Image 1 (cartoon, chains in turn cyan, purple):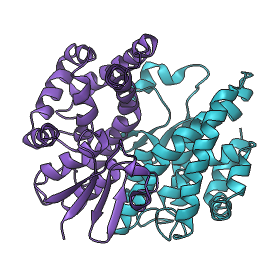
Image 2 (cartoon, chains in turn blue, red):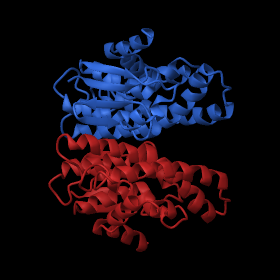
Image 3 (cartoon, chains in turn green, blue):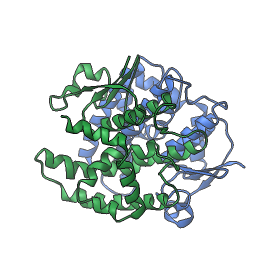
Amino acid sequence: MVMKVYGAIASTATRRVFATLYEKDLEFEFVPVDLRAGEHKQGHFLARNPFGQVPAFEDGDLNLFESRAITKYVAYAYADKGTPLICEGKPMATVGVWMEVEAHQFDTLASKLQWELVYKPMFGMAKDAAVVEENEPKLAKVLDVYEARLSQSKYLGCDCFTLADLHHLPTLTNLMGTPLKKMFDARPKVSAWVANIMARPAWAKVLAMTNQQ
Amino acid sequence: MVMKVYGAVLSTATMRVFATLYEKDLKFEFIPIDMPAGEHKKEHFLAVNPFGQIPAFKDGDLKLFESRAISQYIAHVHADEGSPLVCEGKPMATVGVWLDVEAHQFEPLALKLRRELLYKPRSGMATDAAVVEETEAKLAKVLDVYEARLSQSKYLGCDCFTLADLHHLPAMTSLMGTPVKKLFDARPKVSAWLADISARPAWAKVLAMRNQQ
């Protein structure tokens, strides 16, 4: 029975799961959830994710939600397939640190900025300049830490590409299409890392899903 | 060489790490960081956590930060000691979901309420009643999901106490001293779960550290 991903192609959280499945060359079925119609708040979807958010995921009788819990499950359960996205032993502790960094230090700010600069314009809503002004310098400080880290380590968690890097891709790609691109370009190690991870074939497959819509 | 925890006894994130170490009966050295003096932003601390936040952690030559990365490291490396705080195999996938639920659905709301109801009054600032009302309503919805979950499962992640439950203790305990307590009391399964996990001897040891200061 093939794995199922319930979500939306434009959703960064859903894309995180797609990226992981493509990295591992795993077959899956994508079941679109109509966010505009409020399908994610309806009974049949709430049965999969009681918080009413995409994505949700099914592997046989296992039902999961929260994108980073799904990606971790896939990375561990299918450790021998495709790209290794985790490490064995002690190095995994440091990968774990940088997975938390993405979730708590990067994504909190990046999501706020993405909402103002990417989604609001899409919905014809006015940007709140104060939010951008407040969060841009905070993101700059986070990227300074990334610059220092990437001067010591090829990828964030360790010397291999792992979930700690992958989890950034959806929101990062959105921000690279805004004037905030300059913040990433201004830091050589960060810039090289961004270019490297965005060029991965698995990520190209995720972006191709958008173009098929 | 004994494990070291750099932090503060009143910090919810630091308490999360203490709780894990006590659950596993592990010896550790606590190195207090003087927050009011800005020690967390000084070079010697930034060397252990470049984001300048507590806690930070050392186990031999391994340096970690982000409380949930530290607790997960301890739980996996010392899996055979003290309380098992993680599961083997497939059940860990569901524990993983609820670990992310605590981090993304529960804690941001809990910390907002703690700031309004505890920190602000202590610092002579006015509580924003509108923020409290809005955040309480959101927390109520999250707790409704918890009530349903705890009607199917003894603990959040599975039928055993795991990190998915433990991670809630610091922020949740601080809210028990505020009117937000009523949201927990009003939900029988949540209320019973809260009483159960708060009564754990390891948690009493963490609170005793606080009282010694």
